[in-house]
Amino acid sequence: MLIDKNSPLPIYHQIEEYIKDRIIKGDLKPGDVLPSEREYSQLFEVSRMTIRQAINKLVNDGYLYRKKGSGTFVAEKKFEQALQGLTSFTEDMKARGLKPSSQLLHFEIIPASLKVAATLQVAEHTPVYEIKRIRLADGIPMALETCYISANLIKGLTEEVITHSIYDYIEGKLQLKIGDATQIIESSLACQTEVELLNINKGSPILLIERCTYLANGTPFEVVRSSYRADRYKFVSQLKR
Ligand code: 16G
Image (cartoon, rainbow, N blue to C red):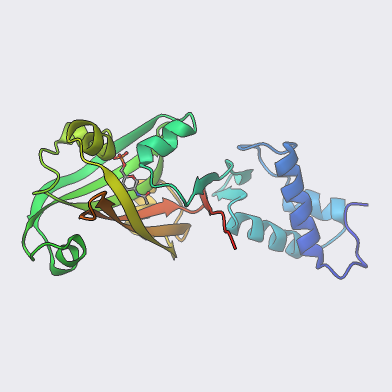
């Protein structure tokens, strides 16, 4: 029996678990089209409404995605991103065996706003690099990043550097040691810019991450606001008591 109609567990939830199970076991693979609501409703002998409820939940949780006019598909597995280590996007993607790249949208030296200056612990209007990049893994857009970096501290950033790795440049070329960071994660829904640049549907879930990173001597050098695709990312941390 696929579902138990006498169980206290709601039927849509049992169906959701059944589909999830098939994805985890690999019977349904990323890119596969999901059987139709009609097929599932015949299989489970329940209404299409109940099936839709289960599928909606799996879409919201990132297991499935819908393509207008073509149906519902199995999504790629989410990346698990550890929250402990202070790593760069380049390092994260390489560690997964993926090819990192960046599409540069904007690069300019500007006077720091009051907010950026306060975080970077410099006077207002001190020159900072303003950098906007789309970060890609194997050519697929994963995140949109806007960062402000102290220009007096991190000298000589060029387009060439920032289309590769900023952290590599800081540690390899400038021989400065990166120490730690504070990070805030919030949830949000994709705005029009994110829809276009990350190639996602309107209203898709987004993880907003704001990071302030310090050199090992305690000086803050960057403040970054990133929008990560919540359909592709989950964050994992180890808790000790
Ligand atoms: C990550 C960092 C970002 C940093 C970038 C450097 C988060 C949320 N953000 O994307 O703060 O500027 O890596 O990457 O993790 P890069 O060395 O590849 O340029």
